[in-house]
Picture 1 (cartoon, one colour):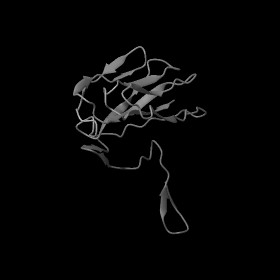
Picture 2 (tube, one colour):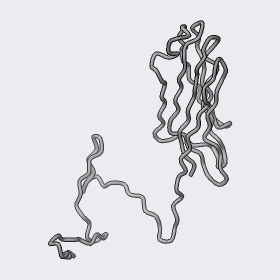
Picture 3 (spheres, one colour):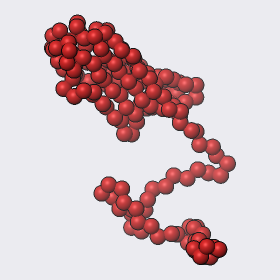
Picture 4 (cartoon, helix red, strand yellow):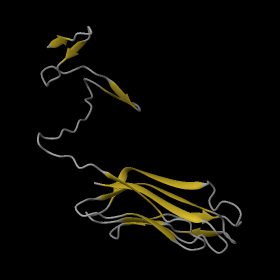
Length: 167
């Protein structure tokens, strides 16, 4: 059923018996009549939990380890969307093993720290890890912690940043 509005435009009421034909494209996928767009509905009267953004940083660390966490919250699950590692080089080249963990699971990475205390520690200025979908804590009220080990003797600057949300 169409309704003409005062400005001359036409408004169509959408319903399951009167679908609006639409073709949307995301990346290489086209959604339309033969490939319906997935839709999540919320039942009447239900509430949707609003995510709470969390950003945490270790701050500057000199030749010592640093941590950044998405804290646990009562009744909520913590999610990690991005981690950044950065710093200056050390006296000698080394290999470090930064981790991301919630205490139940742990993910470990291997990074080479360059020699040269006035240069960058890593080949790229900042190592950025983006998680899509986000990494979820194994239970509610559980923190997710990113740990950057010491970059070594002579490294005067190092930092780990964690980005995520609780929901």
